[in-house]
Image (tube, rainbow, N blue to C red):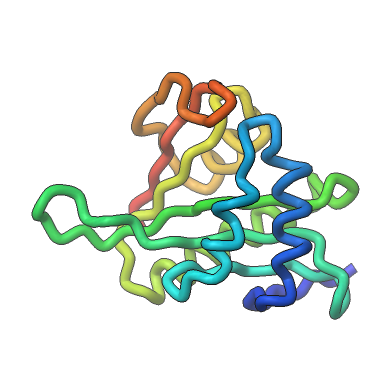
Length: 154
């Protein structure tokens, strides 16, 4: 089935929060931050739909704050999630590629992300798209899991 990508709207908050609970709850409670990200005009949220009104995944791109005083034009892949029954069909890859396209369009020079060090599926996906591990964080997530920060020059 054909998957279409579109900008998320306010009405999509229920889907985004529900899928986030399903996918990310083992890492902590993100129910407070996700609606804020969705409402933030600096954060781009993309929905993958198999038909209008039938979302199957989402991804979020946010700006990264400047490091030190140097001008840093970078973005952060804040979240990527696909409904369980549609995983391993390339939807997550397509969402990440769209995030990259939008980051380049916004003149971002680098894209970073954090993923659980134990999330081998995500790590393989990101590595296959050219992301490399930058840093390992111990007890990064609210529930105590370690994470890897990965980055890619655009």
